[in-house]
Amino acid sequence: MLKLWGRPTSLNVQKVVWALEEIGVAYERVDVGGRHGGLDQPAYIARNPNQRIPTLEDDSTVVWESNAVVRYVAARYGEGQLWDADPGRRARVDQWMDWMQTTLAPDFYAVFWGVVRTLPEKQDKAAIAAQTKTLGERYALLDRQLEGRPFLTGDKLSMADIVNGATLYRYHEMEIERPALARVAGWYERLKERPAYRKAVMVSFDELRAR
View 1 (cartoon, rainbow, N blue to C red):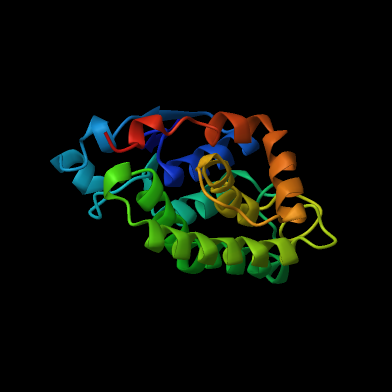
View 2: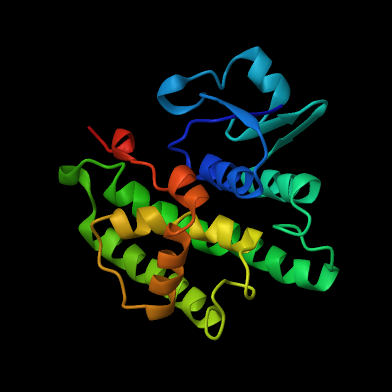
């Protein structure tokens, strides 16, 4: 059985759990990271020298970095579901996966840390407002991409939806101003209809709030 190392409140772990649940692969998840600790233990470092989560063990194969893990799971177990054998179609998925890491994620985490992980009295309201505006522009790009299609790259859920869509629950739960983006809103509603999304992503992040 696959073993996934990482806490359920980690967005990067949630991506992998969502992919596993969509495909229907049996796995065991082990709590590490955050309040669970364990990332500095020699046994964990031997699996993942980066000392972050998630890490996936599949017999002798060990994979870390969340998007790489999602790709591995899809390629190994999800052909015809999340893995497209056509290189051209898969490239369109890959570009949006990379875009999430290089473009959306930095702005998303800047807002999340500013609003959720920082005590209210220590928050930089001007910086948060500017970062929130930029983040809204990133989602506006996704809104344009969704024109004429229910999911980011076509008519069916892909890995691109998983890595980008995993941010939507927190984006909508944070107390911030959001632009009116009808296609993103519809996409979010479609994702919420999926049991795998509800199980993996719609997880309270109250334990991450600054105290």
